[in-house]
Length: 88
Image (cartoon, rainbow, N blue to C red; front, side, top):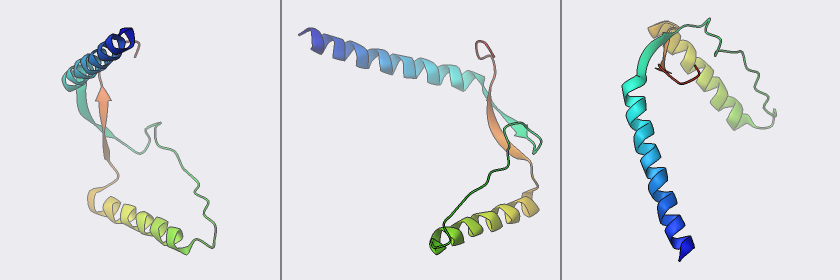
């Protein structure tokens, strides 16, 4: 009986927390501009076995798509910012 009550209470609290979190985020989440010099951007190295031709082709396609988008829209990106985070 105790386990059933605890399980129901746990599910209720998890749902209540999610609702409160979503409400808070909807009030504090805003769009902002993210430029290439933002510290979240880094250069990454991707290592792929030469034998995996399909994956190599997919990565090359992503790189070409990125370059096409940058030419069309510029290098400004958007991201979400949470304002008013405790401790932030």
